[in-house]
Image: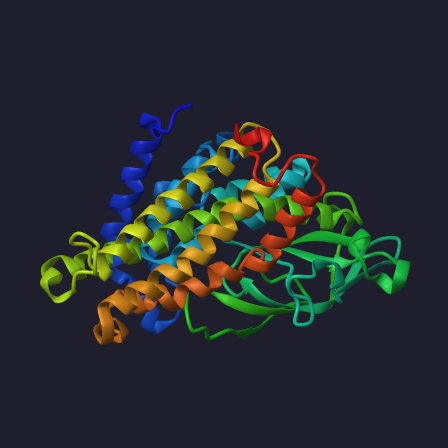
Length: 398
């Protein structure tokens, strides 16, 4: 068992951190206040290869492993969780779906543009009446023997108004009036496709410079060549993509929590005398206890995330471990800024202080790519389906 990162991982982490400190963190407050997509950062993301981290070089990617993706997203999450979401969703959802489930012709057509940053990717699953229940989508696709016609709406689509390539899900089965997981199909579209319309751009409390938009499909035609994977198997494909995405998004959550702890340390260090000693605690202050607990949990969340990444790269089952990492890191991303705000006091609520931004950004990471409640459901189903005691480590963790 080796808990050391490889030299290549450390070098990659350092390059991403330097980029984040030089170009991302210094603009985070301004981008948050403006609430518009930061196109000026895209050339830097492209230059470092952050838009094609895990994809083979033959498609224009860097060919790195999932641990490298998680390390990069932690650094981005520490600097600006909204920019981190752009990188995560582009890599982990749209591009990964095409890589995992697309035909070779689709990979050759779309991946070089996505990995090279010539086009951003969007992955449209969520609908106004179907959030966590992906099987209840209302968007329909009807095949007339030559082409598909899609009608419906999507909501909270990351990169919805700025993407160049879209993977969009629709019901295609006549069974049960077209509802249910066995009828879901994914389609790929390019920006400007007739019938694919961008709707309202959401104004959010957090991750404000991440583009989030509604999409409307109005008699939107798709050829059989635009079907990604096998018709009717889109739900299964989406769940595989989401499992991988949960590993990646956990890296951002770790970055948010880490940033909050670092800000707490910077605040407390010159003010140690202001925090009273806890009775019978041999010099431990309340602020010190908070920092110690949160710092320990940041390390634990990072280890859970990297374990899930290792399992994924090893070709071993990782769904439960991905949900564990997402559950723990997502909740920690919300709790760490909350408790650090308590330590800082009124100054932390000022828009001049970054912790209030971490607090507003963090809520998305409890919800996106499967809420904490969905992760608990995934984990509990697997635990209750096993014969081993719940307290015994899984074989993958031994």
